[in-house]
Amino acid sequence: MQIQQLSIFVENKSGRLAEITELIGKAGVDIRAISVADTSDFGILRLIVDKPKEAVEVLRAAHLTVSLTSVIAIGVDDRPGEFAKVLRLLADGGIGVEYMYAFLSRDQGRAYVILRVSESERAMELLREAGVTLLTAEEIAGM
Image (cartoon, rainbow, N blue to C red; front, side, top):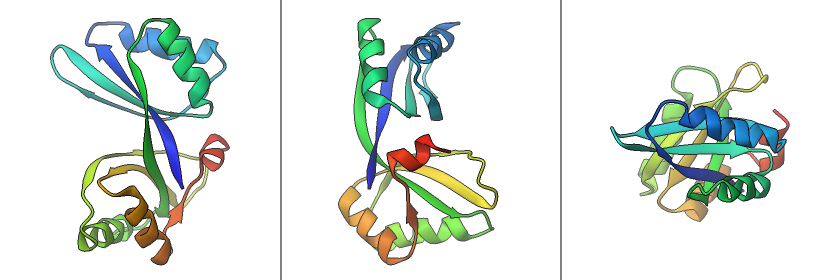
């Protein structure tokens, strides 16, 4: 199961992230995971939210450049080496990881990661076969 991630082009200036998250919050959209990659002039803000379509609408109405990207969300046991097993599985399957970021939930003993990979369908097949938990958008929204 793939989920939708928002990717937002952001000027690297003080207060810009606050403005964007305020817009999202005022629209009643809940942020579940967040990542920022930046340079000296701009950044890419990546978000997993409970209502991606609503978030896109409000951000575009504010003249922000935003796109939806399909990513994979997984849950693994929060123990040393468990995530390494997932990465080894993908590497052995010839699947490249473009980027990733982790997020928190109230579920003790589990770690959650968002992955953008080169071959999503094949990656999900390998992960399912290995017993790795793939999360749905609904599950993430409920965390």
